[in-house]
Image (tube, rainbow, N blue to C red; front, side, top):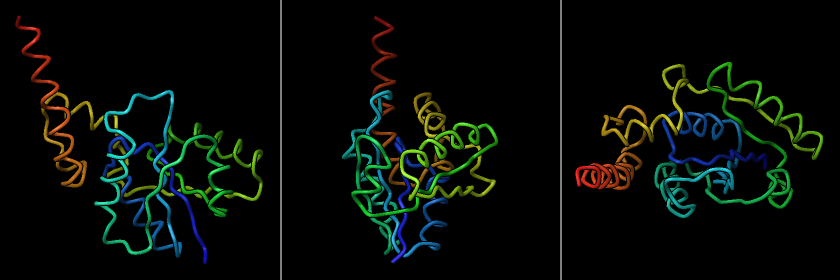
Amino acid sequence: MNAAIYPGTFDPLTFGHLDVIERASRIFDRLIVAVGVNASKEPLFTIQERMDLVREVVAPLANVEVDSFDGLLVEYCRRKQVHALIRGLRAFSDFEYEFQMALTNRKLAPEIETIFLMPKETHSYLSSSMVRGIAAMKGNIEEFVPPAVREALERRVVPRVIRNDAASEE
């Protein structure tokens, strides 16, 4: 069975992420969407919330599973006995960082290959941070994220913005 891991923070999962997941799930027999713990980021959603949202959105894809990881990605790949990493490239600006990461991973674990997939051009500009920013300003995000993610963002972000607005009026 050929398998791959698509790692990310997914805070939140966007249509760009989902497009890469769908493409990778057609290429590989088994795809693990690995939700990462990143100490340098302060996620809006907990690791469990992000996993639950991803699980809900990818439920129709029978060969996709959701897991979490902490630490070196190549070590996680070894534990899972997976030799292919999927990385999404949105724009040329992503390439330099992703290229450096792929070469570093190759140095650490030469048996693991990195495969770059591009989302549809209609989603190529999307980023999770952009979506969080729009949601925080009460903007319409329905074209950027699946319905379950939109609902979770609205529950999480809008009350926080309203509380901040109320606090600033005092």
